[in-house]
Length: 177
Image 1: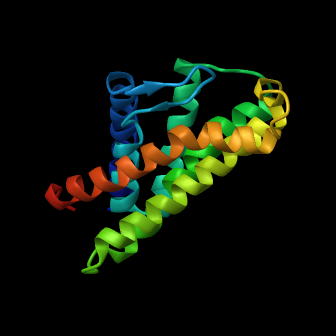
Image 2: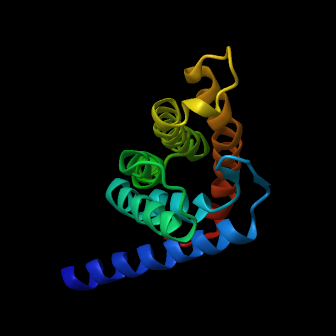
């Protein structure tokens, strides 16, 4: 029984990561010039994390980050790759999964909002650190690097997080456990 559960989790992770890649490719609403975009790629990962919890969310997010890097590489430094891909998306998935234990709450809409919002904040934090450490040369002269990195990364992480909060609430209403 334990082996069957493990196989099912791994299969779900593979299917949802593949769905995230496809959605990321098909729904690229806004593409920013120096990396980052607003799309629905994280929706399947958030739904999976909210259904299966912290650990599955972290694994699927980190795995998505690795696959996203392989398909759309933006390499500057090995630490930058770690920050921008597996850590940022792994954190997003992990903290979205914190909402899984509150499925029966009548305030589940708010639980999803807080869990996914924390995940989005963590993702923004990792992208922001990467921007400050490795992409300071992109900042306009006279503008503090930390502020430029924060505003640039916020311009796509925040709208995408809000979109995922709303859509994951809709999707989870119609999905069986």
